[in-house]
Image 1 (tube, rainbow, N blue to C red):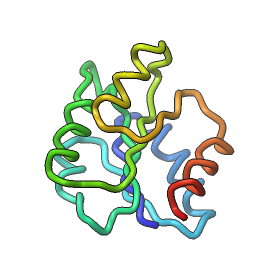
Image 2: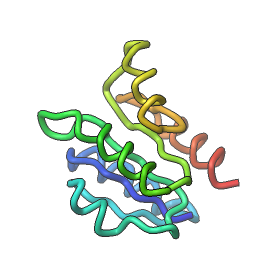
Image 3: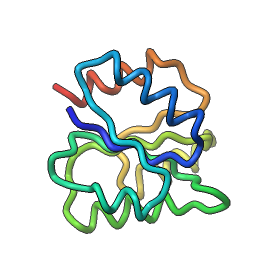
Image 4: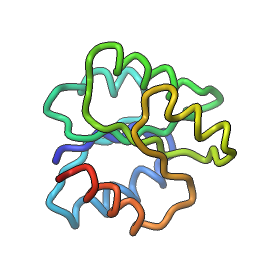
Length: 117
């Protein structure tokens, strides 16, 4: 499965990238919405997206836009948002699942297995 990860924190992005290299999946990591839009394609099996990019909530807008453009593969929010109403916003904008920071790599592995089958 090819994964796109939109993440503006290099440490978080590198951790996931190193993990994915130990799996049969491959990953493209970008740190801006423009970068994500440049590589967005139907060949992507999964999108991981940090919803709080910089000082904005622009990840929410990115997910809405991708869904409006017809992308129907899974999108997982990777976020520090943990309040119930914030988690609901993740689902409302079009995410299939949410993984809250900090998270265990085991949880990420569970989600990859869930969506790669």
